[in-house]
Image (cartoon, rainbow, N blue to C red; front, side, top):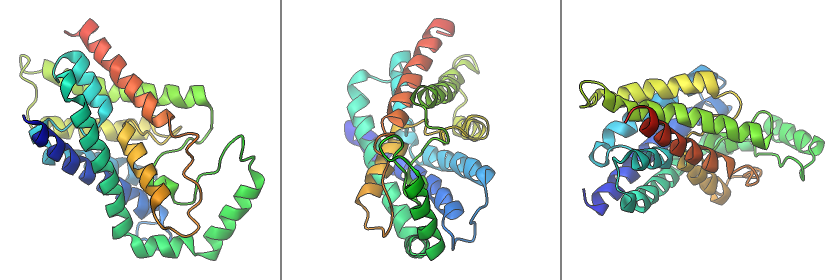
Length: 262
């Protein structure tokens, strides 16, 4: 594969991943949406289908769509280290494009939600009760774009993201162990999608399971830049955890694979 092949494939695949994943978050979060308050199960399955769709679109580049996966594959030996910057660049750009597309698709709903007196009043009341220096309050629609913890504890939040990402990346790496080392072919994307649903249902509660640095960072950047009324903060104090945690988890998963399965 050429660098341009990798970059274009990862950009488009990650954009679709974030469009559909962020889209289900918008559908459940925004008050005038038909799926308003559909719940966590809808979000978990929505992200699983988002992974499935993005992965099939990005098959040309190997459908990493996630720097943690790229790091795990590089440690395993399946991806040249020199290709990592190209993968990362495509993934981050794709994540930002996907977040912008979510905003465009739900443009009227964002405006209605963020100008609703009940939503605006509720957010103002919450901000008045929070020590902003200790725990910066996320904006009322930040959850559409990026993740955040239910209990803010650096060690716990980072550990959760590391553990969840180890499960994801190790599940991807060990697909190659089936069928005499030939892998599972195109069905691998489906299996990975189910793994993502399982992680969401089982490990997503504490932090919202970023398990992908660009899934969180790209949309958070877009949230900070979009002209959304009453959008609140982007919670940059937390932003390093869903970046560092998955990268650490991906590296550990690659090491586990080499020690236990290679």
